Length: 250
Image (cartoon, rainbow, N blue to C red; front, side, top):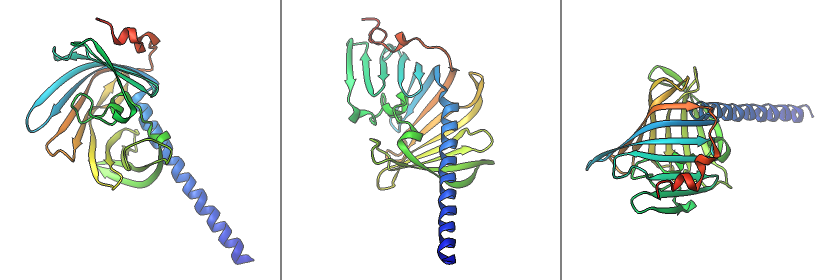
């Protein structure tokens, strides 16, 4: 009986420890994501797509309300200026200014490239929610460029429609800011990696202002995303996320 009770105590301790680790991983990623996104945000950004054949740069203005709503308007170059991407809950549309057409993007294309970049539609409109769509496990600590970081593993929940078989997420212990994210397919092959750098105060908070997405399938391809200006937790009118706004200029 004593042995049986001892085993029960050990099992309870291990279960409690595992719950504590999982909860910690959840809180780490949730806080890190909240710093980057805020409840709402509006900003100006520059995206540079780099391949062995060419380099192209776009500037855009964007509005977001958590993971629920997003509007992205391309401002330059001239041939693409006025093209827009609108997301409302689980639905996505694109407006092409030159042809004055609105296209609804099916869910199957959320993981397709956004405007030829190494970021996906999902990345730009924030469809996925890391702390809701994945099981999180704290793997331990790593030191990256003199920063002590938490290393968290994310595995998709069975009911979640996501493409990644595994994600590894590193963020700094001192301020919860992300350092890098690795994305793996279902066979655990590394497909891409997102590297954060150039940490500075923007919108009243310290954030990484430069994000570089490295493509590990198409060697030599990468996309650099730079935050030029951003505001967090501001009031954004619902009118912004409307078809009238999407198709303005027709």
